Length: 169
Image 1 (cartoon, one colour):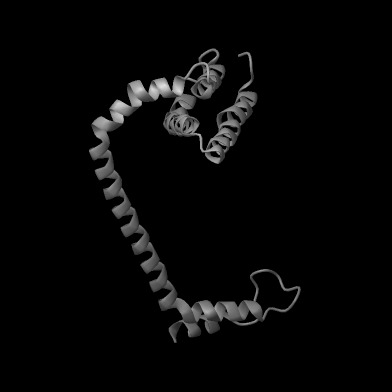
Image 2 (cartoon, rainbow, N blue to C red; image 1 turned 90 degrees about the vertical axis):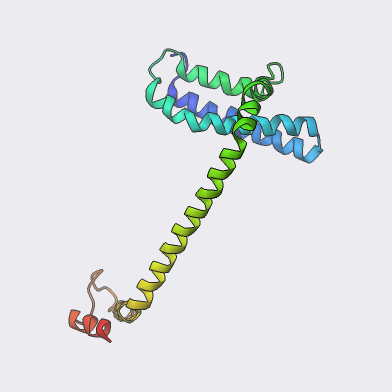
């Protein structure tokens, strides 16, 4: 290991995210379509890379120069002399995405619907809980607000029977 793993991680953030983010900003600000395409492709490939990176970090981190190879790969993606991002995209990623685009879109649509249903269900359950227990919640808040200054946290001046009585009402 030439560079320690923590230093490689810092360099990955700087060279893999901070610098490309700034260069993306420059391309957007200048309205340079060629540079904008380059940086969009970089971020697409970086997204794919980040999806599989965690698995590689768990399984092959022990290989010599693993962290340095990751860093070199990320720099090669954006470096103007290598054009690695555009080459990988045009030759491998674009054909793969075109081949499976309909399936991916269908799965994304189904997943969006399932997530929306799950969120709606959880929100409705939370609303039902609040509606069914509003009296007890308000009683607990009232009791908490009536605590004497300096009282131990969690202690209150009322009794648990008062709280149960409010819950039953």
